[in-house]
Amino acid sequence: MSKARQLADLGNVYDDGALSNRNLIINGAMKVAQRGTSVTGVTSSGYRTCDRFVVSMLTLGTWTISQSTDAPEGFANSLKLDCTTADASPAAGDYLFIDQRIEGQNLQMLKKGTSNALPLTLSFWVKSSKTGDFQVNLNDTDNTRIISSVVTINATSTWEQKTITFDGDTTGTLGNDNDTSLRVEMWFDAGSNWTSGATATAWESLVSADRAAGTTLALGNSTSNELYLTGVQLEVGDTATPFEHRSYGDELARCQRYYSYGDYRGTTVTYDQVVSPPNIYHPVELRASPSLSFGSVSTSSSDGISGLSSSVTGTHYSNSKGFAAYITSTSTGYGWIAYSWTADAEL
Image (cartoon, rainbow, N blue to C red; front, top):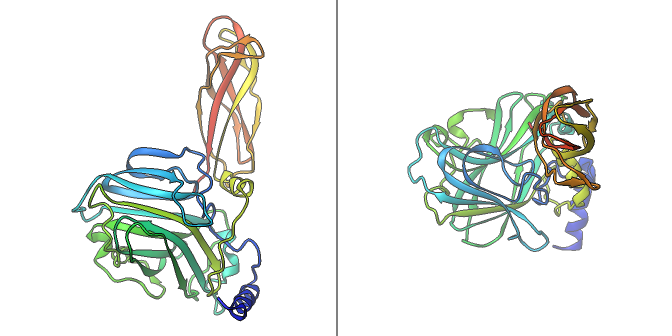
């Protein structure tokens, strides 16, 4: 790229109002995987391995989802989908896609729904064991609108960078709140309910049959199939700039707004004693009051004191900042008590 072009691109970015914090995608380099680095036997939707990316699926094969170290130059990780049970003939309602959901309050600079609505540019790296087309959508969930583009994987087992620019939408403002307003979707396989329409090359009212109309990749048709994704960046404007690499700590904190975990250890108790709830504070304030789950941690010893089995019997309070849990020891003796927790405030 010439120096003149680089300066022109920088000028475009400046005009669009973002020299830093350009990337609207969280964890686009797939650095953070708080839930673990691999999960097998996946047959349904959920957040798997790499934070903030939902693997959405309905009865379309069985998959291993992992945080991979296979990545293009300049990246260390990718999100990998590996088909372990094939479905070569998906039923009409079946689907397989990845999406990230973005809060409306983080999108107000788009001026969506006004005559000055700004374009968005999506760039990413993809690698697959097979060639073919898949459809990428911006899905405005506040106004049930969509715009799409078809991406072609040209070569097998080769990292390819893709860039798409989507026009601004002069119809439908986005809510200024902490709920989902925009979903960035990548459809890799689907049944006829999702493929029988036409790719929405301009903003339109959402039609289910259009959401994967350009997808021919059929990623689920063989157990030889796999796909890797990284370097996902969504930015304001009509120019794809170099990927915005954020520190691991910065990316982790952004992810912890939606999901975090930890453990509590150290209250000394006797058998069957109900412990006054300690205050636990989340690493960062969560998007909303979370769903809490509790488990156990090792109770072998703590500063020389034997551990007790324990259980959480309820919460005294819970909000986006923290919680307090009621705890009861469940084994004989005297010692310390412990529990683990996860807090889920995902979109």
